Image (cartoon, rainbow, N blue to C red; front, side, top):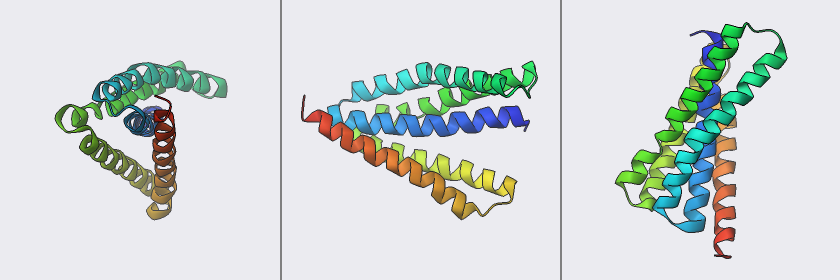
Length: 157
């Protein structure tokens, strides 16, 4: 895969998973509302995908090392991967109880992070366990932090 496409894909996947998991766990803890969680997922899938794509676009332009074609490949790849991966979190919420769907979503998100981390580590000749643990630690911190922030917010509602 071309480096510009891979860069956008990996960024979109990681951002889509981490942002969406944090948001759904926080909304679950604060509202316990399927509607709020679905609305949040849709907002992330659209607004944050566009935001991240523009951020990638500007970042690539600032490097002054990429062709216009490569910049747009990274931009579009970021947008599409974030949109698709964030949207996948809607499926469990639609078909399961909210508590169960949150567990399924966490497992799904962690699986995606493990998979992309393993692939990246192999491509770069690094030890996959180290890369996987490093990336999982960030996701787990986000999940725990947003859960407790959501719980705290729920005390005001």
